[in-house]
Image: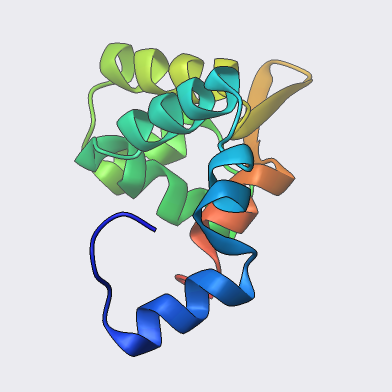
Length: 114
C-alpha cells in the first residue's frame, strides 16, 4: 500500500481486500455519470422543495405551484427534468396530470416530511 495509513483505516482497507481489490471495485463510468446527474438534480432548491411535497402525497402542478410559490412554467421545467431523471412519474386523470415519486424518489427523500 502506498503511503502510510492510520491503523484503523489500514485495518478497514485490508478487511475489504486491500487497495488492489478496492481499485477493481471502481464503478463503471456510466454509474458515476448517473450519480453526478442525480446529485446535480438535487442541488436545486426548487426541485428539493417539489420532492418534499411529493413525498407527502401525489399532487397536481397547480397544487405544487401554490405550495412552493414556483411559477407554473418554471414548475413544468423542473417536473420534466425530474421525470426524465426517473425521480418522479406522472399520470393523467381526466384533465389533470398527477405527479408522484418513483421508488428512486422515495429512496432519495427517506422519511423526510413523513
